[in-house]
Image (tube, rainbow, N blue to C red; front, side):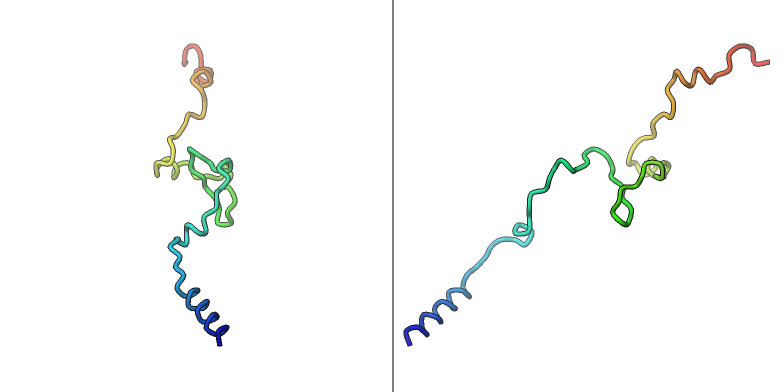
Length: 88
């Protein structure tokens, strides 16, 4: 009879335990910050793979404000393309 009371008391004590931790706090684990890409927009396909730079829609990215359009050639390269001398 004593054993039965002890078991009941143990079960009662177990049901009265309270946990005040959040689910996200229990599931949190430290991430490796060296794998983060900081300072630029990271674009991925639906498969989760990185989008190659050549296939990105530059007009959309610039118009949506993700980054500014940069020059395709330097000023010196553009000056070399200008025809020299008289135009006729």
